[in-house]
Every structure is written in C-alpha cells, then in structure tokens.
Length: 100
Image 1 (cartoon, rainbow, N blue to C red):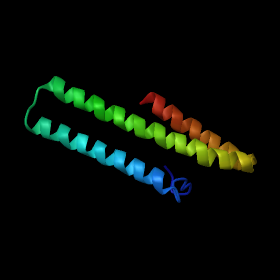
Image 2: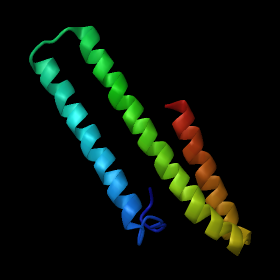
Image 3: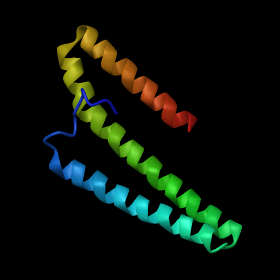
Image 4: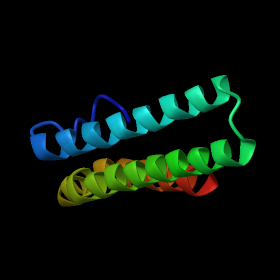
C-alpha cells in the first residue's frame, strides 16, 4: 500500500481492527515457528500454515474493501486521471490477490 493514499488515516476503528488481526496472525506465525523448532508432525504444521494463510487473505480482503469504499469512491467523484489511476491500482491489487 502506497503512503500517498492514506485511506486509513482518520479511521481509527479500521486501523485498530487491522492491527488486532495482524497481532493474531503474528501469534500464529510464531506458533508455526515453534512447531518447526520442536519438530512437530508436518501435517500439523501445514494445517497451521493454511490457517495463517487464510487469515492473511481475510486481512487483504478487508483492506481491499476499505480501499474501494474510500479511495475508489473519492477518485470516482474526482473523475479523470485520478479515477483512472485508482481503478488501475485496484485492478492490479485484485490481480495480485487472485494469483496468490
């Protein structure tokens, strides 16, 4: 996410929700690290990797929703080159998410 857009700025509830989700994901990843260090069963580790991956995907979708609700709406109001840039940016972000 580029700093120039700042769409979360001023939206403390969204920022706090994203940070809470990120802290949970961080805990999941630390748990996976511990499992590897303790040489736990590979399938159990893979299960936890899958859960962390899904959590990251959910975060990405939430960020995308925020972006569309704020940045894209604002850009659509402005029209022209700003609108085109923001639509292209969103489309590229969606493409990256679909590929991951």
